[in-house]
Amino acid sequence: MLNILVCVKQVPDVNLVKIDPVTGSLIRKGVPAILNPLDANALEAAVQMKEQYGGTVTCITMGPDQAEEALRECLAAGADKAVLLSDRAFANADTLATSYVIASAAKLLGKFDLIFCGKESLDGATGQMASQLAERFDASQLSCTEEILSLDEAKKTITARRELEKGVETAQAQLPCLLTVEKTNYHPRIPNLKSWKASRTAEILRYNSQTIPGLDPAQIGDPGSPTKVPRTYPPEAGSKGVMIDEGNLDKSVEKLAGLIREVL
Amino acid sequence: MKNKSEYRDMWVFIQHDGKTVEPVSLELCCETRKLCDAAGEKLAAVIVGELSEAELDKVLDCGVDKLIRVSGTGYDYLNVDAYANLFTVLCRKYAPSAVMVGGTIFGRDFAPRFACRLPTGCTSDATELVYDANTGDIEFVEPAVGGKMMAVITVPVMRPQVGTIRPGTFKYAPTGKREWSVIEETVDFPVENIRTRILDFLQEETDESLNIADAEVIVCVGNGLKGADALPRYRALAEKLGGKLACSRPVFDRGLLPYKLVVGQSGVVVKPKVYLAFGVSGAINHVTGFTDSDLVIAVNSDPDAPIFNYCDYGLVGDMDEVCEMMLDRS
Image (tube, rainbow over all chains, first blue to last red; front, side, top):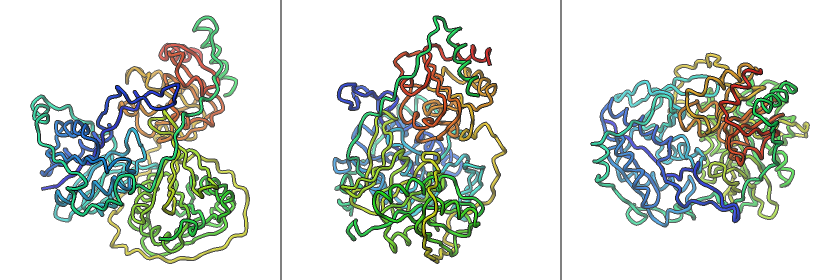
């Protein structure tokens, strides 16, 4: 029986985030918070492993209370348990502090054979959580997994095909192993009505900085985050290109085609 | 803990396969050289294993002051366990102020890991590096929140400042050799402690269509794309122009095209002669992926789309219609 953990994040749908043209700040109001899309692929891979080898899939996230919604989405899509780590003291955490809190809380839930997480988040997009979580869990790492080929429970190994820059690698890693997956083979499933309904009322395990034993306050939230963001600013607007308008589309396209021909 | 001013020298990890050095490692040497000049620090290249004279020359040409040459067990193939250990050991011994690692898949796997172990701060995908003389910190500047704004990231207290940088972000513009010294290090990592084994490696069955970094022409589709059915005409146009099809991040998020075709900060940096953007909104994290193109043409039905601020020529119109018309003319 496999004990599987999936680390997920609720993110603002950044494609819908707008910038206030006057203040240059982000307008988050009315922007829906969604389950990070690549986390849904990670969850799907985890659920497929459970279906094939048996076991339990636990989803864990750190975030505000409303991140519960992302967990319910995971429960609807095949997760068995959900854990929410929420505390004001966790706020402003970078990947180092976040991975610390998640790994510390996960210790309360048992030992995991497989840990999945999304390749990167839609908002922060550092893509660093996977390797830092692997470090915190003292796990091996298989990033960019295109397909999990087999798992040997006796030998405690997992074999997977990875899509690398110059080719496809078949690699074997010892458990516990942390994996990130490609989308190709792990499209998130659409929950059926029954599982969706069940997810609405399912219990969600909650922890805060007081209920995770031994949590070092110096390693969480802002104090535990070595990277800082001293300032942000709107991107340089660039300079407006020459707009082509020859009166009708046909002529305009002809002009464009001519410009391209000149260069090639 | 040491005071941060006691950490000196900026390091670049030289990723290679025994034959050639990854271009991104050379790009980082050149860019880090500038930071070292600004900071009055030395540039060190960390090379694990053997490298030919010619390849070594390319590294030295970037103005490297020190070579840290590592030998030992555990480095026969790139693996996170041995390399994360190596950099933990080396950083503790030599206390560099910064470690730059190419944002290859391997670099992104092992750099955040040793940063976590040290521990220190790690940044990824900066598109600009600036040395701040007042604080002594490197400013890692990068597009954030889907490219809606630029964020300055620093590691103000801890050292080293670790950064992974995407291939193609900076130029390989060697400034020439300087006098250099060599430090020989042996760090053995027990082979049996490597937790991943490579069973097989298949060179990409030359699906050249997925290799967009060096394409001369790129036809890029953005979120304006109606769906998978609309794709063939763009692929056809790319082919007709002797180029490749690419996309912006949302198209990948929608599952329409693979990750290897994503142009931008968290994808591939391209520098074609012609960059044709169809239905691309122009978020800055995408824009940073094509700024070195010779000619940028944008087609978008929204006259206010930001992409028109980052192109040489713009055309307001339906992307599919324009593409069809261009097909007829190419």
